[in-house]
Length: 115
Image (cartoon, rainbow, N blue to C red):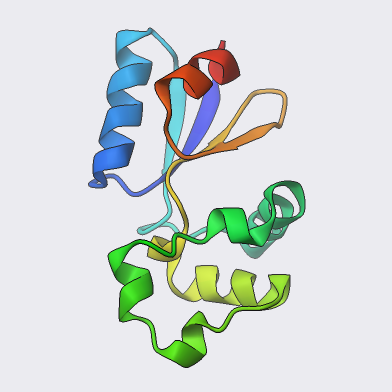
């Protein structure tokens, strides 16, 4: 089983859910807008994926941030920003049963990652 982190009403998340369901892939969903993401998990993601991969600089939440908030230049600043504004985390973040991570939704990547 995979664990999918994201925001329930996001269009990209809906595509990921639909893909999983149509391909009979069991998943557990963690809504980080409602539940947040533990700091330790964000640090792990940053170490594994790089904090620049995790921050969605094209989304509405990012555009609403002040220039000072957008001036992220370190992992610790990125983690603090993602904890304060979980909607700034790219979606979905998928964790495989073996502990590997994938960010974003692409049907081809999903197929090779979750099977």
